[in-house]
Image 1 (tube, rainbow, N blue to C red):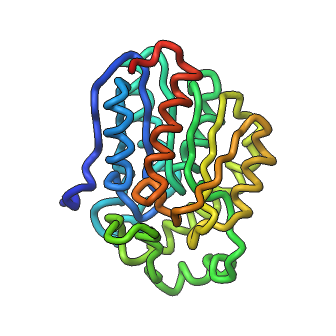
Image 2 (image 1 turned 30 degrees about the horizontal axis):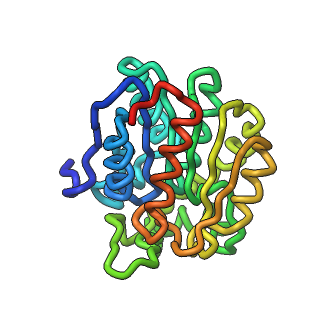
Length: 250
């Protein structure tokens, strides 16, 4: 199946310290590219996989599930570990959810995690109806491009694939339950004004990971990696890597 221009996987070889970046639900690696290039310029090896069903069609996404997205992230992580001495994982929205799952499952291998507007639950009424809606409708109005910065646009589907969304919703309780398994350092960015992920996800993250540090973004909406606070995230993630992997270049 054809991949949308800009949605291709990212692989930027660098030094012995690596970072795996993970994009969000219905999004693509386009939302990761500026972050990836900043990390690469700091001397890090960076990969960002295209998750199954993303960057193609909404119909394609509806045939995939959370387990497949996680498997692709795990594959990218193992590939980078074969090339690097130390590997961090970072992600946006569902990418943050997947990054935390990797830190739970591979606690002895993940050096640290940086997550941005991580989705862990929702209080939306339509989400409670999702099991029913997913049987009746293929898709719903999209959530892409929630960005404050004028002119910035996210490459994302205009609609939400409901069967895939239900899979994500069913994965949240598992990720939440296992948050205490995370032993690595965690830096969590949260936009004060986010029209996709509610503040409750941020609260649950901090409750489940006592060692996590939260930084609030005051000038960005959900897709903060393409928004006004992107430089803050990029610089902060490099500082985080250098603090927890002294061998990091740059």
